[in-house]
Length: 407
Length: 83
Image (tube, rainbow over all chains, first blue to last red; front, side):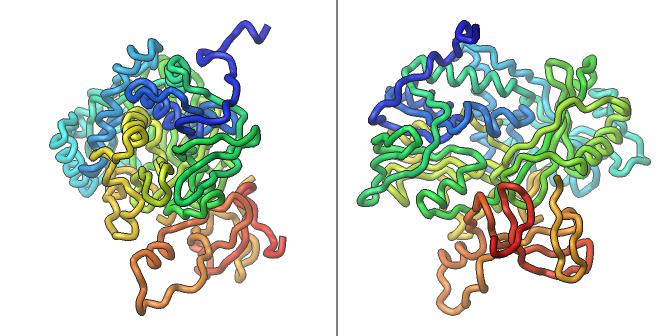
């Protein structure tokens, strides 16, 4: 009976002896890169190797929020393009990604936060991204459930309102991109673990898996939270990454009350209402590395306190599910996208922290261009690994809500 | 299954009382003749071990002492150094 439900990406393909490109990690970045390699660059002999199942990692664990109001001039254009691609991909993939363009309200709880927001808004507007500063009264008009009283822990001074953002159904993106990549002939090999990357004379030659060796001149490491460990274990390349667990949870489904995504740096919490009616909330990270994806009662309490102060009407609402995912955090809260410099044919796309979901479409597009042409597109150049040794870290830690491994 | 750590002064305590201080990377490199790459390696680069690693912790909400211990990053549990 199970056979009747063939996956959108077809039956499991036969593992070939050689591929033009091998992508490690069947998450959103890997699938998007494969899709764009095949669609834009005519490279269809591609293997996506996934140890578990596609969307097992961050792709299926994020809280589905998309936005383009990052802090620095290098980051904003990338996220803007990612945001602009959702409606395009929905059509191209012929698959409903359920982009809900509800806008984001980033709550500000001090004069200092308002000043920081002015900077972020100026950066966004300079890059052509819509973003405004609004006061607390306007917040209340836009979202009547919000508590703007002055006697809460962090009273609301105003918000940074970013209308182009919203939420996207994250599983649908995994399925849609897998469908699209498979349509162009890419091989998605699930339950296939990479055990080694072989380099000869400074060039990538093959990838070892638990199902055999695949010859290939190009490898993309795009394994999300597992990338840094793979990089060090298989190639001895250390990365400036700490792998932390970020937790999230959803409540029981409710009638529509949250018509925007809200986030708060002071409360360390964000919330959105999914199209099913659940309030999805998250933000807490245990600030030490581990790969467990375990959840903690400590966080349920924190989240309940934070969310019910901002949205008192949620008191008594029950949490239904609680999960955790890996976030590979860099010191400057910006990703590492590099290739062809340490080893010819070796590309990396990692260090996304908790921004991997909202960036996957644009990253896939440009990493595909990088891999197909061998030339790094201008938009990706600031994200090279060498910036850490040059002490040219990006300023994303100045964004309104951030965590670092050592804060 | 929350993390518990053994402070050399206070004994076993809840992990949330502590601040993680990074992987143990040995002594700070000598400043004379230090290259940007070597400094970057010491300051930023991590092994991200999936298994047991030696690491720094500070008993932030306790006695304030800095110490090293071993922890299994796959289980999020403190382990004996020899295991």
